[in-house]
Image (cartoon, rainbow, N blue to C red; front, top):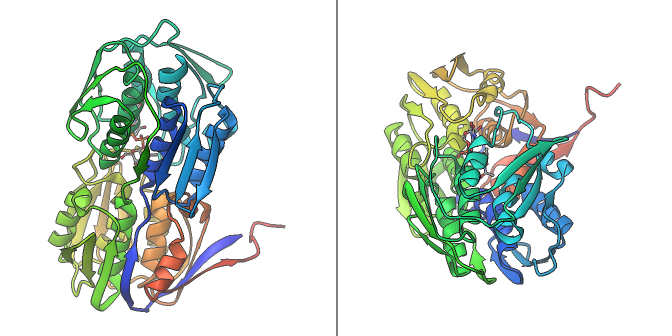
Length: 427
Ligand code: EPZ
């Protein structure tokens, strides 16, 4: 069983450069289906979710060459299938992001119904409702969703019930090839949506308003391949900012490779907690907090506090001088991380969507299990300042979204390593 073992108490120093954003790269890869030919994506993170999306595209007939670890040369000229198979969708829910592009290119899509995950039901009803407004007919059988727009996609006005990131993306990727204009109201505003719209526009799409609640897409007859650089991963950056706030030496650490405007609410909340964060060229410098102040946080769609930073914020709050409340409004079950942090000495009580966190003096190293991608990374970060050793298992979750996580922490001076230990559940 692979684990990450970290010894607490080592000060961090120097600079870390984050990788390209997972939650942009996956959708940009799907969007290449809209433009037959060779599209090059740069600054793509070398993570397992990207590998899975690559398998999805190759299964459809695309070819992908990896150049210099972070550039993907994707040729979708010979894509002749519109099916995202169960075994890949089950592995990665984000595979559903191919639905919009497949409808845009072929007028058809066959997608395995995404199962739930440990964050909750993860439905796609808003994707379906929005695409139905564009003329798509849906049918489901044997665990698959069959989407049919053989009579063509027609531009429409769609108001999303909730500012869903995935629904906004799928709608945009279908609407770029619809007849007429589509207006999405209550659209998600995440920076990854803007990144997607920028790439699609460089392919010949006509999208205005991405990053605002109202996105307008004028359908075009065809899209052409392009070259696009993925934005830096703001959530990976936020994870390292928490590491610096807890464990940096006297000079702090630099976190680079991302646009700090993409973490506005996170930086604002962390400054309220007494964390010293200075904007620098290409990122921020963060210094260790002498005293962490308690704070109340609500996770909300961008520009609100991102749910993907909830676990990391909980680590900070758990060491604050006072009591904090973190309310999770996006996912119905994203507090599993808290029970692992309690094993390290945190004092947290969960009541429905609220986590009541009473600061403690410190964590003690323990054996803990990653509940999901962000929780796993947050447990490693907590281990940086825990007394003794922390062993984090189920680290395949972390590998989904954090490229070279252990090496980046080691390069900052942490005492951390991947190790393989006998699986205690083996007979
Ligand atoms: C994206 O998921 C991200 N994943 C998530 O990051 C992120 O937490 C989330 O956006 C919110 O920012 C990727 O981009 C690959 P949503 P997505 O549609 O698109 C419900 C990570 O750690 N919902 O905004 O699935 C849904 O169940 C991951 O990198 C419906 O009910 O998020 C959830 O409770 C975790 N019906 C909430 O809305 C729908 O049709 C937010 O979902 C769609 C969503």
